[in-house]
Structure formats: structure tokens, C-alpha cells
Image 1 (cartoon, one colour):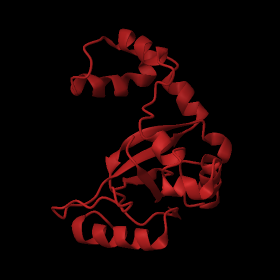
Image 2 (cartoon, one colour):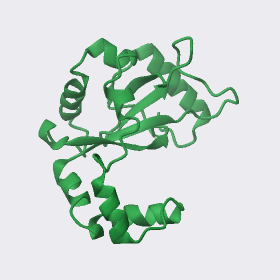
Image 3 (cartoon, helix red, strand yellow):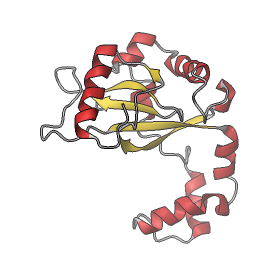
Image 4 (cartoon, one colour):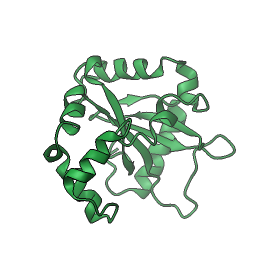
Length: 177
């Protein structure tokens, strides 16, 4: 299992984490490129039910899988396989960013880190996707990319965040910070 540190959340409730190196610091790209993060996002019960309700609700996701040559199944056959999984959402990064004790942010806040994070997202008021704690039904992997601006909910130590933001200012044209 890779080691990550959970950095913070953006205005959409997406949570960002960086991979840690052997020395416990975040892994810099030796070529000086922008450092992307593993990103996860909250899913409301309403969206979860919608995405697992009927084939048409997941058609866009199926089309993406076809375009990426990840499936040759028809929509209905793919959908039946999709919902037969215990969790049809991609949760590959969720445990490392919210549960894994080797993550310094999770270790700092203890076993109730998910609830702590959800409360922080609700209090941030700038967060648009998460309205209240009850809206977070599930978490899913969102992708691998850098934030566009400083986090509205900062979770990692301030010194680490400042170094990361400085790195993004130098290497990422889209960073507004």
C-alpha cells in the first residue's frame, strides 16, 4: 500500500492527497513538473441511487468505458455487471485518504477522521456539493490532478501546504493562488 497524506478539500468537496516518499515528505517530481494529487469526492445517497437505478443513468460512464476500450459489453450487460459489484464506484484511493493509519492526517485526527472531515466540509460554507453530513453517502475516486486554487479546508500542516502551493505556483499554469 502506498503512503499518502491528505492535504485538504476544494470548494466542491473534493479531497486531495499526495503520495509520501520514503523520508516521509511528499514526493517531488524530479523534472520540476506540477505535482498532481489523488482526488476523491463525496457522493450523495440520491446520486448513488440514481447511478445504480437503471442503465440510462450510467450511460455516460459506460460510454467513457467504451471510448477508453475498457469494455466491449453493451449498455445493459455492462450495467448489470457494474451494479453487481459490492461498490460500483471507484473507491481505489478512498481508504488511503480517509482511513489508513499510515496517513499522517488520518493519524492526527484518529479513527473518526471521515466524520471530522465531513463536519469541516459542512462548516466551510463555500463547499457547493456537500450540503450537510447526511448528504455524504459514499466516497469515490475522482481522478489524479492538482488543485486549481488553495484548499478551502486545509488538513495537512501549514508548512507542507505552503511548500506545495509554492511548487504549484511555479509549475502549474492553472493554479490561482
